[in-house]
Length: 495
Image (cartoon, rainbow, N blue to C red; front, side, top):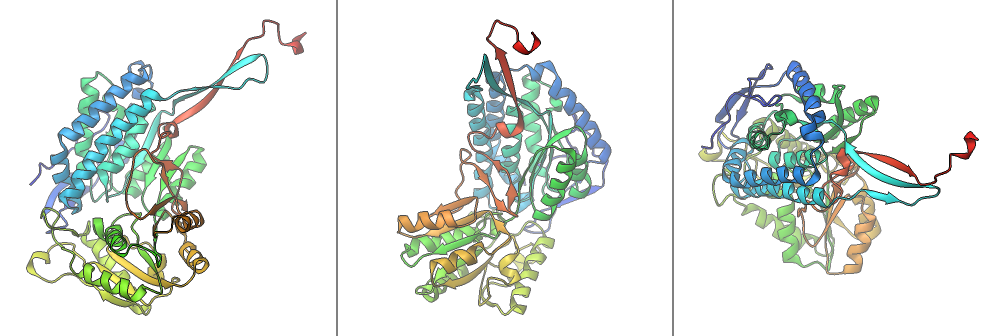
């Protein structure tokens, strides 16, 4: 059993018990109670925000040179890597993910801090073209206090993707982890707190404030000192945050839901496509915003491809994330498992055929956990709710198609536009489809691969703005223009 954080949260460099309601965190593999924490309260958010504003304005932080701030980011990355095994075990206990995946996520978080440090050290302000007797410069300055609100499916990676560029830009951060999975974010907070203390920097630059989104998240978003919001989560919550940000006239980046199409053309490498489709929807137990949850297969190979896919799905190994052989772990919470099961029941009502899965696995080892069998459904129109609404679980809907125009129309006939996968040997067809599909990320002959150096964002109801990429720090700064007069004569208007 990993070391579980005590009933403490990080507020302005201190570790008190939260003043909010108790939050129970449960191991979804067996229903075991991991910890009971007290959530942050509105008063805790107020204290953290005021201390963050003071920390962001403190000369020790405000005047820190980029290479000195980069040194802090490298130190945080080193600490994450040093504690990767503990962070992995804690995240597996809290989320149910396999140890292989949670270790990869921890190492990814470390790499995010290092990449961000490199981007910070090599960032340049610009001399812009002059159209008169002056030289102009474009410079970037910190925003101040930013709010980072993250989901439960990949806490440590999501935390790094927001906290690293925010700190690199010179800000202070109020981090709110998901109510169901606060433990690894609190452990991450201890590492950042340690790095700040070692460097003699204001410890209030990061607070970790767990609790309900409707209480803690809302208090962060509405706080007058919070001047930027980064959110990853559901589209409905994202819309509410966008409205509040608009009222405050502050920027917001929103990484929201998806219902991503995966396309298998008749010329695809079938073995490669089968492996990619399996990984794209059933890894992480389907709990991924970019999961390839709608499978479009050309009619000429639909029956054979889907038939083989179903056989392979039945062989996937379902079990606890701590078991080395597990491919599909439990879902994050029993309530979420029940919501996924309700969608499969809805698919049956809509006329869908459940080709495999569609139930809770039987056996004593699954009895107390939040497990659901990997499921493949067909026989539904693309307009069915099961094909349109994000399920966020191990549920794949298969649909045949005949021609490219029809395919593109159906693939784009959704409110979302986050990701897409294309399986083909035809490079021209891949290029053509990739440009026609409404998606912020398109994978060709691969799926669910990520690089911190590549921007990530969505279209339509999948979000607003981007994360990652070479300019990831600029999203957490304000741009300012400076004009330097070069003409020695006074401005003529005053004569």
